[in-house]
Image 1 (spheres, rainbow, N blue to C red):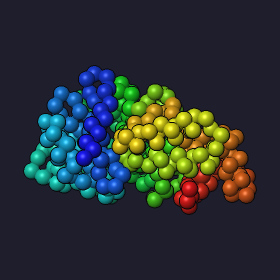
Image 2 (tube, helix red, strand yellow; image 1 turned 180 degrees about the horizontal axis):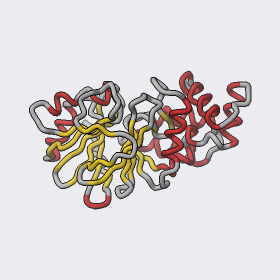
Image 3 (cartoon, rainbow, N blue to C red; image 1 turned 90 degrees about the vertical axis):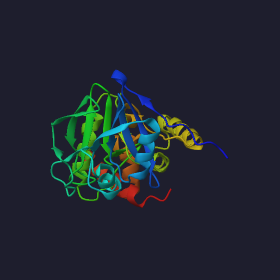
Image 4 (tube, rainbow, N blue to C red; image 1 turned 30 degrees about the vertical axis):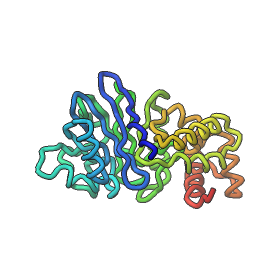
Length: 270
């Protein structure tokens, strides 16, 4: 039997670290750990989180919600039953279980570190992200994916494009922690859009090596996303030309390019 790979732990400033708990078919539930206590982000199911926390001897302190979809909140009730675990989530949300409700510009302490809340509607209307400038990381839920972005389930293309533009303004070194292992599929689409992008070709090879070793392709960095993610590259002539050739008409401004890209990705079969 081939042994399972070790949990890939990302070390952060100040003694904290963050690591993924695989769930369902392709979800990652992120665990932010510091001094024996754990903050868990978007726990769609409880059992894998419980096993992981026991294995590392951690006490669950806080649960963080980015949006209301079941694969992000479905494990919360079981994880918090009979406990005083704090639940942080968006203020205006169909998920009503949060006791600490947050919105744009709010600051919240997670695992002893300060995070700023960003309202980023598009994938859903209640979606928020959590950014720590000190730790240099972004918990972006399903808004931004590695080399892709979320589907438009509730919001509009202008909303989601606006959210991604806000992310794009963060320092290139920012570590990006999204919640699905979609990188391989997203790269296939990105290469259909920009087949001559050398950075994208290198990223594809890196992704293949990681998946062959049964390792996550995450986190990425904002710099890596800016170089390879078509949804952050709507101003690039290569992306505009690809969209025009696919749609048969000039897409117009950057938001229209984004909307056309998202519609193309929705039906892409590559």
